[in-house]
Length: 196
Image (cartoon, rainbow, N blue to C red; front, side, top):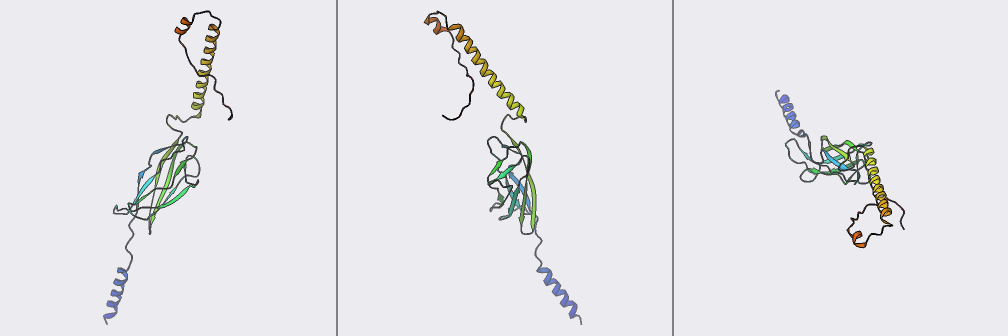
């Protein structure tokens, strides 16, 4: 009579022991690329590298890692102008997307990173900034201002050179006196033309 409850208890114990172990949660550590500055004038971007670990901190090999960049505004694109790149982690749990290139827009942005292994999942972001390079102050007006200064200095040097040449052109000074006179060299007007 007591055999039915005992059998039910044994069946429940066997079924419970065959349940899959609970999946440990993943964690993504950003190893390289966090806070990096990309150079838009040279088209150079910092490659992000992430490490995927399990709940006990051990590297997870062969995890699927997806890097996704913003579709508008300052951003970077992967090889082939793609906004999304999926790679697998190596034996050390490390993953790096294929070659990145910044677009021509300056400012801050985030690369979204997702990792998946079995039923476990994790996500994070990598913060980066696009700038045109060292000395950038954020305005294109400053670039135009610098170019104007260069052109004005070149024009002033050309005018001074013309005045000096006009004053000494008809003089009858000796060659010894002319040799002692300082010579100044300046840039002439800047011209741009097609190939010859």
